[in-house]
Length: 233
Image (cartoon, rainbow, N blue to C red; front, side, top):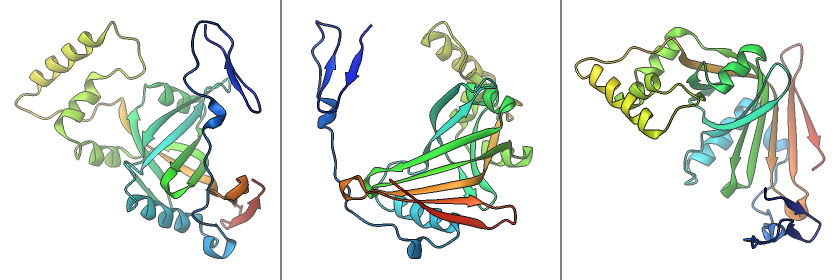
């Protein structure tokens, strides 16, 4: 087993015989593009997210809708992965997946999650936390039938997160399913559909010089208003 230790000014590999590819502490960047003030942020986190997302979309970032989704099991064991956000408004943030996947099983027993957007060229990060619930069947159908045919077939083929013998087995199953639907279109699988994360917390992070980043947190209050606080970096 290869073990790494990270120290203040050094990073060394404990096991001998494996040259270290790079000094981890040498990867350093100063952030300086912008500041995030209370005046520019306002009191509506959805409006601020919309502004930042639009900026990300026009900045050349590939898939600005990619977000890290973190879930946890009933025992509190966390797991995280990158998924694609497929829509957002004041009702929440939507993504689609296999309900029987690892994240689906987590959400069935622990319906709280967090997502993170990282837009490196803009030196911005957004963290969002809240409760997750399935979207309606009609909404899942609408998105499923908008997908390319290959992706729709793929949804039937993939037993997401389950162990399979090898790649050949997956390709063979795809070919068989493709042949099955050579003259028709597959319906949405009952085990596939959308989720919506309904936020109760937002945090907007703007990189700053000397690691003195700007962090503004919005917490939903019982009356529906958002409380905005500045956090120490």
